[in-house]
Length: 137
Image (cartoon, rainbow, N blue to C red):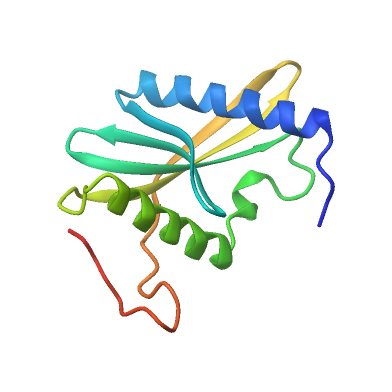
C-alpha cells in the first residue's frame, strides 16, 4: 500500500472541492461528502432531480499514469456499490432511482481540468457470493 503524504491528501481535498463546484454548477444538490460506513466510503452523494447520484472523485497531479479515469477498477466499483447500498439503507432511500458518476480531475498550473462522466457504471449485479443480486429501483 502506498503511504499517503500531506501533498497527496491536500490534492484530494482540493479535487473534491472542485468536483463539488462542478456538480453544483450542473444543477446537482450535494447531500453528503466523505460519507462512511465502516471501511466503506462515498466521496460525494448528490441529488439530480429525483435521482440519487453517487460520485467518485479521481484527482491526479498529472496524466502520466494513465489519468484518473483508469483508477476505477472492477474491485473499486464493487466497493462503491457496497457503500451505495449502505447509504441507501441508512437513509431509507430504496425507492430512489440511483446512478454512479465519476468526476476526473487533473491539476495543472494551480487549476483543474475536469471531466464529469454521468452514469459511469452500473450497480454491481451481485455484491459478493453471499448476497443475491438486488436493485432497489
